[in-house]
Image 1 (cartoon, rainbow, N blue to C red):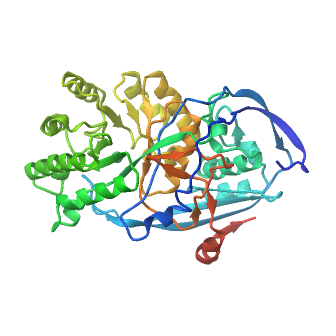
Image 2 (cartoon, rainbow, N blue to C red):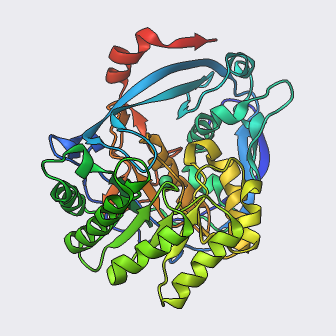
Image 3 (cartoon, protein in one colour):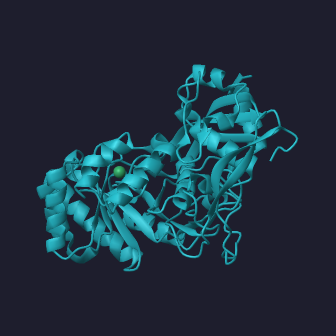
Length: 443
Ligand SMILES: [Mg+2]
């Protein structure tokens, strides 16, 4: 903490470290190292409430004369180790992703970063401000006098504030006494089983089997298969039969102990979704996502059908919704079991609200995350800060500008890092070479 600067105090909480933090092992120096030439990737996971000591409300000191002195923004590019094909509604997703990286620098030498798409006016207004002006511990990041649109910079602000306070972001997200302990496993699932059978017709379902096997080899214990081929890309009956064949094949490959998730991108209607589940029989689906466009009576009917069959399959939905309040009608009726607000769109602040609302109605959070590597490590932080987190979704994309030394992956889960901020660094050599020439600077 920048003690040479003036200091003031705000109420916050402190989580104490679990003395039994699991032994760290050098799983990867960075995500890219894992990938060399294979299909690959990694991931993360769920939350383990066990083991942490009660945290206590306490005063936190922060420097009153801390100032943001410089901001940069630039598009960064990441590559996937395999081609991602179609889903029920969208054509091939390809192998390259783009994110927009914002970096904040302060007068005392701290630095934080995050992704977002802030307006230029917001960035200009942030220069000269104290980052703590935008931080309210019980709420999160908010606009302050004379500055709007700060939500698009919230990840960078959380990271910066965490680094200034020398605390992981999840300890700042958590309500007093509720942060998970460093080392807690956060379960992850591989979200990359798209329609590879259509992408590689010469291999067909065998290609999906290969990808599922690779996922298991990488350590995943949960995997999500896209379905809904008959919605747009195949004859409806042939597409239906292919979906059934794929789900049976994936279950065979991953074994009985791994979790199988499905996502139809609303490519079925309720009758079709029920028919599909009957057709795959005992394949054991952990959650069914966006089987049909969300609608309270339809969701409840679908859940009733599943319970009648004796299946515990959870209904997951809501990646298209924009705010926590948008989820209210589905949560109050218990139409959704798993809420999937998008990690980057929601940010930690809105996710805290969604998490609370979901918890009141027995639902858990599994943020949608696609086209982003950042969204996965943001998900890990969120997991440590809320009580009802289920899964991090992993897109295999790798951005070589991220250095992930502090974020380890073990037995299908990320281990909550104890590094300050988001627990991820930037590779300054890569940044300098690829991005600095293109960045916009505000100071
Ligand atoms: Mg989805």
